[in-house]
Length: 353
Picture 1 (cartoon, helix red, strand yellow):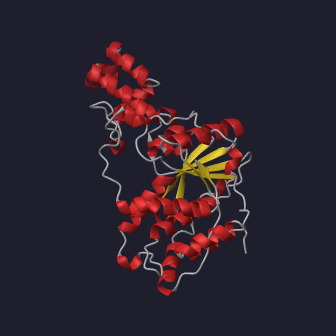
Picture 2 (cartoon, one colour; picture 1 turned 180 degrees about the vertical axis):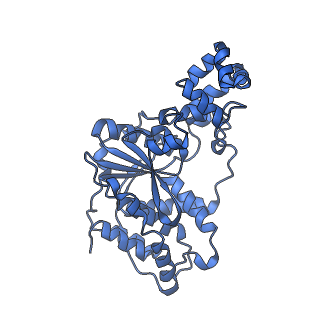
Picture 3 (cartoon, helix red, strand yellow; picture 1 turned 135 degrees about the vertical axis):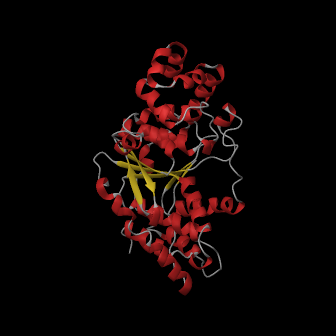
């Protein structure tokens, strides 16, 4: 489902306004870190990992003291909405030509069908956070930002497919706004990540930063193989027992991918001895190790060729434009939740008086 909208504005009173202004001050410097290529030739699309921002805002405000929470005149805690709106504004201030927020679908995905314990280690999502999802969606739509959801699919795969299409079909540069390391596998000269940091700031993470992080031993396209070997505890992806990051990098510096490593584990005893990974070879050549590595790779690989209509339509659907109603819907939404600083920031982006 893809949706579009505009909306909201408004007032805020005394204590709430002061708190909201404090939050605004911590958000204003964000765009400065993005301005290096806001005007990229051929177009620049920002793809936002929608739920990651919601979780980040929710747990960030949960950790705050009562005195610093953002409470409106109705007694509602609107801190998450405040943070979300400012994050979207910060990204829009980098002046992308296209922009979309991608959300996970409800319920199980095709990865759960592959591995019943996928993400089984995660605690249940707090009810208070669940109740915020439609409010965030309403606010994003009101801000004239496109949203994309595909039934049975995670946002990662939506972003992966839109990233591939944006580069290949339009020649766009792509910025993926997310703290999720899984997106490292998509990095190249046309694709970077924008990682949220403290004080409302984002930092660009490119292929160059990736190379430094991994000691120049592996390439971004090998990151899926890296995760297949070491696993990913956050998603309950098993990996191969006994293989840690250092060994995985060493192996991937020698072999191009997991399949080559597994084949070598069966036949290349001398190579493993030279690398000092003889014990690891036993795990990799075992039936359990081989099955776990291949399953893990399927689980961590971001899909880039989804067939769903919602990710295969005209990419110009995501073009950033001034809303047809000149911001009335956005002003209504901002007024409803009493987010005056976000309203002013959003109006400045669209040159609305």
